[in-house]
Image (cartoon, rainbow, N blue to C red; front, side, top):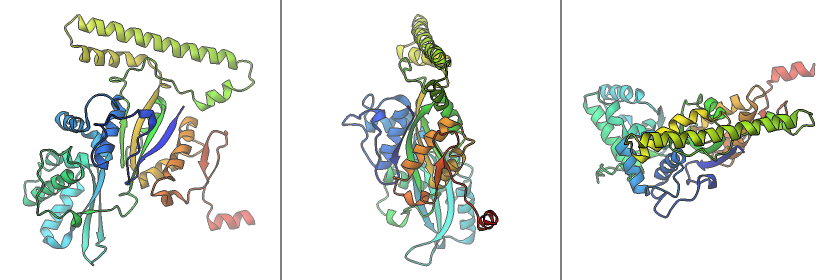
Length: 374
C-alpha cells in the first residue's frame, strides 16, 4: 500500500515507522544531520543496523556519496555593502553558477541594507572546492571559507575536517527562509517502482534518496497493486478472479526466480574468489531485472514549497496516472500538516472523474464566471 508521511519542514526530523527504529547511537546530531542520515539509511534499509551516526557521516564524506546532503538546505545572507562593484559582480557570477542553489536579493529586516541571499544545500557546500576551481581569486576563497564555516555549524559530523573560526558571526550570516523557493519540505513516500520512475521527472529544486535494489534484499518485498487493477479485481466482473490468480502467480514466479538467481550468482562469484559483500551486491544487481515495475520502493523526497506546488498541479489532475494521483492526495494532506500549511491553503480539490483520489479544482476567472452566468 502506498504511503506518504511528513519527515522534515524545518522544525524537527520525524522518523517514519516504515523505515524501522534507530539504535541509540543512530540518528544523533543536528536536525540537518538527522535528515541526511535518514535519507541515506532509507536507501540501504539500515536503520537500526550498521554504522553509528558519527561513522555514517564520516563514511559518506570518504566515499563522496553526497547526494544525501542535497536534502539539507540553508539560507546564507551576505551584505552587498561590504563589497566593491567589481567584487559584487564576481560574487554573483560565482554563486549564480553553483549547482543546487537559489539566488536572490532582499533587504535586511533590521536595516535598509541590500543582502545577497543564497539558498544552498550541504552537497554544494561539501563540494564547493570542485565548483570553485575555475575561479582563482579572493572572492572564490571567501565563498569557500564561508561555506565551510556554515557546513561545520549546521552539520559538524559531516564536516569533521573543518575548524570553526571563533571570529565568525553566524547570526549575521544564517537566516530563516524568506520565500517559497527557500522553504523546503521532506516527505517519506512509498509506492511502486513505476511511480518512482515518473516521480524523478520532478528533479528541479528537489532531492531524492531511494531504496536500493542492489543493496536491499527484495525476496519478500511487497508489490503495489495499481488502484485501477484493484478496482477491477473488486468488481463483479466474471473475469476478475481469473486475472487476480494470474497476477498473483506472476508475482510469485518473479520472486522465486529472483531468489534463485541471487543465490546461484552469489555462489558463482564466491567460487571466483569474490568477497561475500561484493558478491551479494553484484548478484542482487543482476537479479533485480527480473522484478517488476509494481515492486514497492521507498523514497525520501525533498523539494521547495514552490516545487511541491508545481508537482501537485501536474499530479492532482484527471490526466495523471491513477496510482500517482492517489498518492499525491496523501502528499497534499501531509504538506498541509507542515509549518508551511498556509502555502497550500488555496488549493481546492474535488473527486477525480474515475473515483480514484482527488484532483485540484480549476480556478475560474471573473470573466469565465460572467460567461457561465449568461
